[in-house]
Image 1 (tube, rainbow, N blue to C red):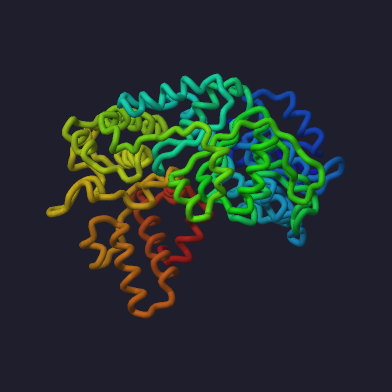
Image 2: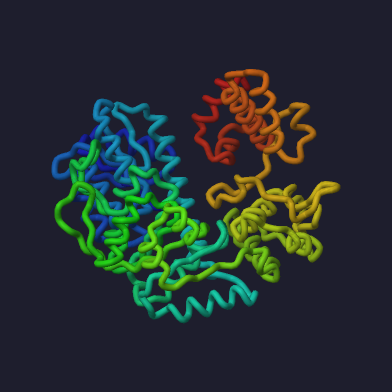
Length: 493
């Protein structure tokens, strides 16, 4: 494993962290100031760089915040933990705005500091696995005529810098198409920067897109480059463009017109050479009629429109995609790939897939974890795919949780109540239990259900590991101090 880099001018802090991390069998490398770190980063190759960076905020020769900004420019995926005095709240806020993984208040509790560093290491390793999967896997799969049309369009646009609008339902793979357009374009050696305009609060979106100058608003202690500057020479992917606030649409139109913009709080125009690819699942023409989307911006973005088919429109691709995702999930989890029977594939191909390809990927991840045998049969498919008596298969929809890529849907044991015992799955039981408590006028529903959920999760993990707490914590993805504290808080001793 790559070392954890510690940056602090206080020799005692470095010594304490080094010894504690050594006991955890985590390698370290220490520095006294930001200049040394930047020089080491410049000369290090991929295998010699840090796994994570832990930096003090106030040091001679450059602050931790300045170091954070410079590191994030060249290594955006590197988790950075900022150490700061408790009274230095503004610095903590700036650290988060600059992309810090977490901040560690001084004086710190050593076990908590090690637990935080361990969590950052695990996050870094997950990111590395995800990057390897993205680099090693085919860009896109599809034999259906509708997908072949998409592939041909990508080929025709490969040598063009024209603006592209990608439309399609959520989960249909719009970002994959955007990445393919970038990879096969003259800008392939430049950065690919993606931003989901619907996922960022309105008051932060302007700064995310265009950056801000120091002092532009409370907490803006350093200048920050926005996504347009980060994508200079490459491609900027604006996902869910239909949700962009109306006033920001005007600023975006100006950038698309002449390539110039101003950082928030800035007075000097900045020019960025960026190809914009936009995507939406909404009907933008209707949004224009409703006055929610600028017509001139719509025409500026809609130079070339590329529509992605829903998965139900390309059912012949489902068997190939399912086998691919089962292989991918097995590699990710380090287990033997499972095979899927023709009968189970036939059942999958008749399912409506409201969550599209993303939903199929999550179902295959669920099957890799939950299917009892190496050969997946129809009875092993998750509840949302296997209909109950009197219910049509097309009516089944995957739970909202399963449609989100960052949270693969894995069925959990339900809490032991009569309501949940009759439920079709644990989420339906949870909803029914919450409704019952709310109807009873309870005001502690959140705490009550959270305690039951955490208790059942921890007890199940302990049963799986025969009571070994450290192993249970590792399997749950939490620290050993966390599971000990939870056992005490929940009365599970």
